[in-house]
Length: 515
Image 1 (cartoon, rainbow, N blue to C red):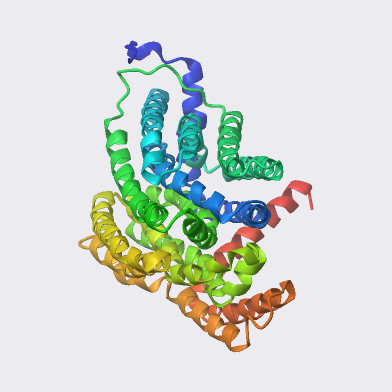
Image 2 (cartoon, rainbow, N blue to C red):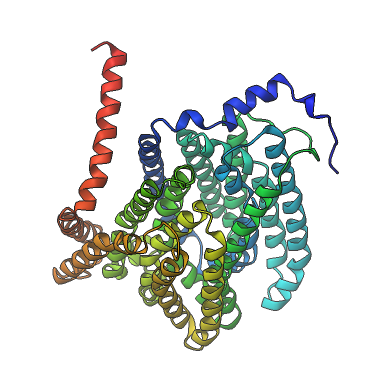
């Protein structure tokens, strides 16, 4: 499988590639500003993606039925593991490694593609069994089609990792936006012509194709042939820890759907899926991208305890500042939100939506902690916490399913509420990471969100289901939240960093223009 080549065969092209794609010394000089700038670019792109996602949700909810989403929920639950571990943790290894060379990254890419080919083949072989388990033959071709996305996305895994390693966040934002826009257009067109659930599958496949093409166009690195010489052992070991953690996350995020689909039916699963996806919008569009930005920064300062603690606290604080108020607002306006975004046919989603709110509220902390402890080489501790939480979640799901989708949602919320505290206390033992500082970091946005929610509720939300009422509630909530949050020193610290970046950018622009 591997080609044995003499060590002196590295070409000048590979040396140039190493300088352009692998070396990171030039990033250290203004790491803080690069991180804040990357966060800005990522946040702006995610706002655009959020608008696009909400728009597609509004349109597709009126073109498709709960049964369509229920079927897709089953397909997503089965294939989610493959999509979650599509890079086998090796992209994070590329991002986290202090030194890299062309041969190592080439090997990682081909290992990823090979493993995804196996994973796709296993999924295709399992498809008839899954269809038989749920009693619906339509699942077989759907699973086969979705399995192809494993291989498509694996082809660009290292390209995107190298873009993140070089902090090229504009390129990554362009890839995400264009691929999502392409997928939404395909889905809406297919749904308009009566493709039903295939519109959702087509959306995922077209996004995967567009993302891979964009990654290869914007990252000029090209893989070489596999080599035995390349030292990949450390990278592969790091990747194993990431994969193990992602498998635990898969169990927590998808066993619930598998159980609901089997025992409550596709229609109820469709309602649960839409409620879950509404709550996942902040995490998917804000927390996860922020984590991708800060992982490289945290990895580079992990040997400096003071700087690492500062960046870790700001990571939790910034993600919580944005995600928590959105969830709190959606909770107090749940009836309006569901009616306006999904339509009156989805009113059965409201109670599930409310039951899932605590899980979504604290998910921003859980996601941030994952990035922090991976960057600090505490992945083994994080994995142990994940195993315990996963076992507790799955056991709870089997108990909660007796009360239907709402019971499962309550179990998930209880686990997610407890998880941040237990994870911080265990993972920071005998380390230079301050557990107390991490626990205190999300307190301002938690308090501000709860106070704003109480004020918004007290002003009489849900009196009328209308766009005007929803916007009015949003303004009341935003004003209350901003006023409370501004009282905390940590908020002022974050905004001072942002302000210094803006001033720096303006000064550079004026200097470049000769003013």
